[in-house]
Image (spheres, rainbow, N blue to C red):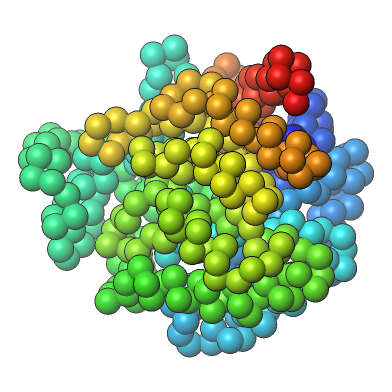
Amino acid sequence: MKETFRWFGQNDPVTLPHIKQSGATGIVTALHHIPNGEIWNIEEIQKVKKTIEEAGLEWVFVESVPIHENIKLKTGDYTKRIENYKQSLINLAACGVKNVCYNFMPVLDWTRTHLHWQLQNGGTALRFDKVDMAIFECFIMKRKGAENDYSQEVLDIAKKRFSEMPALEQQRLEDSILKGLPGTVDDLTIASFSKMIAQYDGYTHEDLKNNLSYFLNEVIPVAEENGIKMAIHPDDPPFDIMGLPRIVKSEKDLEDLVNFIDSPANGITFCTGSLGANPNNDLPKMIEKFGEKIHFFHLRNVKRELDGSFYEDCHLEGSSDMYEIVKAVLKVEQKRGIDIPMRPDHGHQILNDLLAQSTYAGYTAIGRLKGLAEIKGLSLGIQKSLSL
Ligand code: DNO
């Protein structure tokens, strides 16, 4: 595996020299300052690339070139936005940056209800709590029809928990969902969020898949011509939320994705944390099945709970078998004769991370470093013992 670390740019408290000390050689980053849907010009791309290279590192993956909402909805100026996207890919390729991660999640990117959930050992983790999500949708945001998406049991607990919830805790919950996570549009309010969601009224999974297929059929030929590998990130969590359709969450969805257009440029970011929150996803089997199409691995582990809640566990613990996952990754690499870029995805807030509240949620230095070290050790052990 080619070890990489995500870097959020000059404002990231985890700096490039810090990352260099982690042992990772690759950087995963984006032009975070360019508004979604605008063209990434060569000058801006070169600036970031130069900064990374001057630190003795390599820009291995772009995460992400985001997809404008009008493209997902296939509405308004979507043709212009798609042309902009193509031009950004052409410009990236001209600068020698040829791996691009993206997602097709409507409105929100990844979603959590807790950004600093207390662990017994004193650290904190990210958590998605089904009951808290129901509280947000049904009682804080008051989304019409939200109750229909939850079982009576969850609704009853939510009602009781909400009646005892202090205002500050309600605010914390709202902020975690609307403002907390890198990737989601900043500064969403309940009103602006409700408006964005309303645009998807009547949109089915099939509609969204058709729009993804349309987008890929436009963009992938340009990517292929320029030697770019596109890698879609699965939906996180891997089920519908807020009444929005989610379409990249299972083996069947990934099958549809690769069938939309057959090209080496049309690939997958295999995120074991996102896909692992769905108990029906057999991750090692899926890695073997889609091996040729996986351009990027995000490795982490979630601990699933019975009601659909989960929290982010240590990288080698949790509900997924990281030994079987890494073994499957190494077998794919052996078959393809390449090292596939991997980043230890997220990390707990531990030790000095706990002092640095300004780190991007999930992107602590020491928590991720621990994940990287564990995965690296596991990988070495498997390679030596199985002669992979
Ligand atoms: C979360 C990330 C996602 C990811 C995007 C890719 O930690 O994995 O925000 O970057 O979904 O487009």
